[in-house]
Length: 236
Image 1 (cartoon, rainbow, N blue to C red):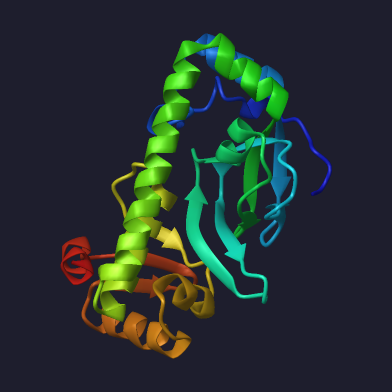
Image 2 (cartoon, rainbow, N blue to C red):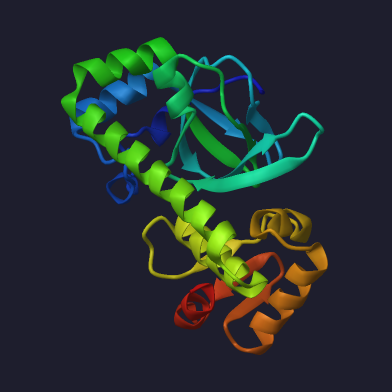
């Protein structure tokens, strides 16, 4: 990772988006304490924040940007498990359990994180009841996402349904509560196919079909969902 740099003006206490984010929606006192123990990190696209099996040394709050979380098998096969966006907390399970990171976290676009050392985070958790509540909510959210992802892959009978669900989830992650379903298509078609459990050629064909049917529109790397209801129907 590149050197860490502080940007006092970009503090948690001053963030205008914090009330929209599950973990970041803290009291003034807790937000100021998070600023004191956290260090802001600016990363370019395709930078690795931490790697699977690396000893856990802290947690990372996503301030801006998008990341993919992946795991690899012994023979080198890689599975993208989910995307993480603004407000997400990375490395939480490993930090709480004192274990190694379970996944690799890699940025998909320029990203800003707040890095908190494990010992500081555990003290923060102990001293602020609301942080414990938020942490519990984050863990519950992560559990639900894992369940829904497993359900999507195991029970969805069509590639179009799985891809539709991915696009809807991606838009929700990228927009963090905002009404417009717009995001930057930072994953390659190969990576989308990995997540949807299908072939790259199928993803390309389905995206073109979704656009012809008026469900999405694309402008360069930007994708806008025009008809979320139709995609919801496809996803089952």
